[in-house]
Length: 446
Image 1: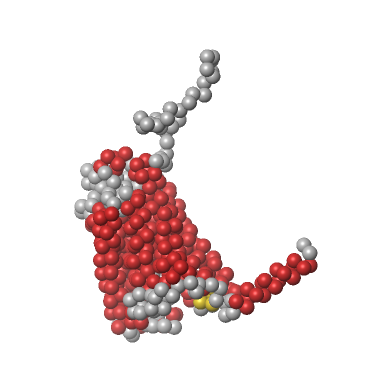
Image 2: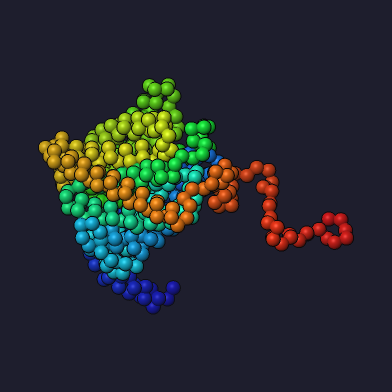
């Protein structure tokens, strides 16, 4: 390489440094890794959910997660980000960053603004994808795409503003390190409303609906745990002690939940199931998310252990009802998120977080503030989700027909099958379709 070319590259580098004054290299490196880790969580969720449904709906279920990468991701960049983090009022951000206006290499904290946009976008994506677990095996894909896009803009983004973007819950002092209210309560309540609006699958309660690939679910749980280190650790927005605390708590809390969940399974049935283990890991991760950077490692273990009980028993209760929350999103994310948000108000310790103490450390008011935040998230998510589902339902049918459900949504919504047998399915052409020309030579043997 010629010397002049090297000098040109060096000049470009110096120019970039001048534009990014105030940006810290170590913080930026950690946030680049964290953003990639959180983005991985949505395909991981596809495997987690995909393994839990019947084989005829596996691709459709996984596509519900993958679609969020596009429809929520693009919506976030163009409009959602400014509604959440644009300078605005207590309820909604302004339009100052509409279509990415003013989002460049300038410092946002100690990282480039564009990186902050991307990191927060990965949260919006996976939160919307989480809702799909209650809608699988019966929602038409076009209707789901419309709902997904609108939900990311008009339910997720305002709630993110309330807590993290300068809104009223943040001003009130609500503690939500990485998304107990914004992500998990929001998604869990939306899933519950979605299940109620759609109604049960046609086979629900009439035949056993069993997971078709439990190893997929275990793989998804493992990748979710891996990505969650970026989800919680990255929420410090810097490579600092707070990130290290959140990182350690993300390891410890799910381990405690898994331990307690396994013991509950053994005491109740004498068997510890793999699906139960995968579920326990997610519940522990959910519960520690709002507390990750606010509590000590010992408190994180206690939060993980305590969170197992409400989610475990709500899941058992739901299975005995007509409520078809297909993959128990509410029991896992809704109940786990509520538990974690409230326990943050109990176990928060200023000696570890430098921000606020909780009930056990002399500040009972914090638990009340956490309860207000939980209530606000529940009410807004429920009302917003219900309104959007009804709106989409006016424009296009929400549910697949009974025959489409029977065949499976892989074929009816995507024209594909996750698993084929033999040499292929029979090709059925419409009467208007042109005939397929024969490759057999005319007048002779093939």
